[in-house]
Length: 77
Image (cartoon, rainbow, N blue to C red; front, side):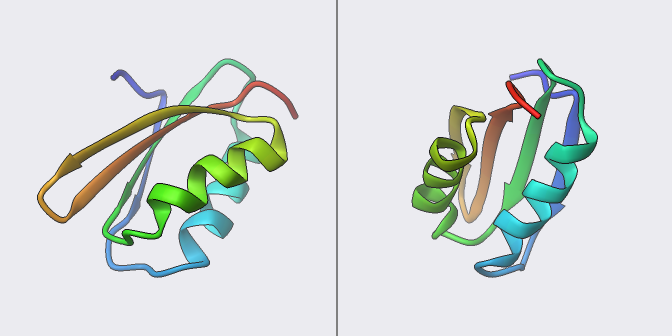
């Protein structure tokens, strides 16, 4: 998936991936896609839940070994 921005959170554990994602999403334009790169397995449940709570669109997850790539589309400010 083509992302407009990438956020490398390799090695960071909960809650930092969500906190840093929230900060970056605020700086993005509506319609842009953020790729979050993480090793925290908790992001599999945390990111969809955060998207539901904040009104952003969860686009999915790709796994490559220990690397998790999560895609979020900004749909509201």
